[in-house]
Amino acid sequence: MSAVSETPLAAQRLGTFRYLHASVESSLYRNGKVLTRRNLDGTDGGREGVDVEDREMQVADARQLQGAERRTVEQNGFELIADALPKAEFDFFSHADVIRDYYPRCAELVKRASGARHVYAFDHNVRSAEGKNNQTRIKGGQEVQGPAHMVHGDYTLTSAPQRLRDLSRPATKNDTLFEVLNGKPLVDAEVAAAVEERNARFAIINLWRNIAPEPVATHPLALCDAQSVGPHDLVVFEIHYADRVGENYFAKHDSSHQWYFYPAMTRDEALLIKQWDSAGPFAKSGGEQGDIAADGAPCTFSFHSAFEDSATPADAPERWSIEVRCMAVYD
Image (cartoon, rainbow, N blue to C red; front, side, top):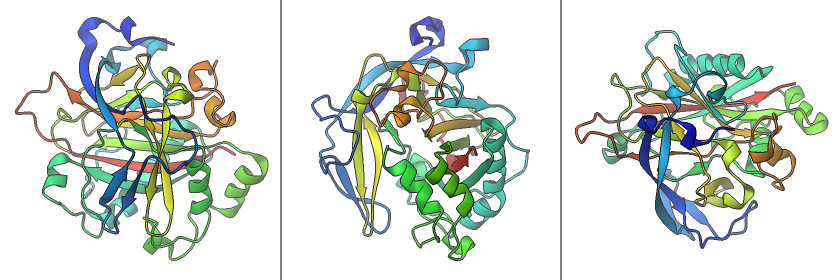
């Protein structure tokens, strides 16, 4: 495992990250202490227990890493794919078009990169601070979301396997693919059974991409090497919807966290971000050990966050991005 300090100083940036305050109690499972109540329109109806602090951290330019130093989605939780998708134009502001035209391309790329046997694209978000402020709405879908500036992981020990179970049941109105699936499940029953009954490996991998003509300059996305995170850094963040409760992990600051980013990402590149892997040491141990002791095993997930880059020019163009979530099953 390579430390950020081994990256040339010229290739490092000073970035500001939003963590939960050190006084917040660490947790691996839901306890009702740190949460939000989500309104029907997708906005937050109020947060409880979310005491935050901003921390400055060194962020290494991952483009400078060569050979064995390069970060991979398997070992570190993230990986850049160059010339990732055909030079086709997609209408990223049409909910139906993204599902019909873009989802299959994303699923195929994740399948090829991960080696999984089955991959299902199941959800997506378009993000932009400008779009959020202007309340831009995707045709047939929800409003554009802002860049996520809280250090987080999308799933937990509880919510990751639950997401797979949900996708193997008839789709409901809460599912992005509800109208497409017409009440049918997305994940085949025999595939889900391989996980439930034979403990087959599954993973949730995001495909993140710039969709603006200009390279990403504002609110760049940073990734935390999974092998630099321990269970004590995690706090369950509960998302209370009208009919269910979702979960992800927020992070508490630790000086050992190793942050990376890929400057000036273009539309021809894609970033794979591991949101969960049932074969990771953290997942397999039920949170008893972190991926820091992986010893060649795949990592469980990577914390990630938009960050304030000290080198961003004041007149830099606005970031517009899309992320597509994919469920991957390896058996």
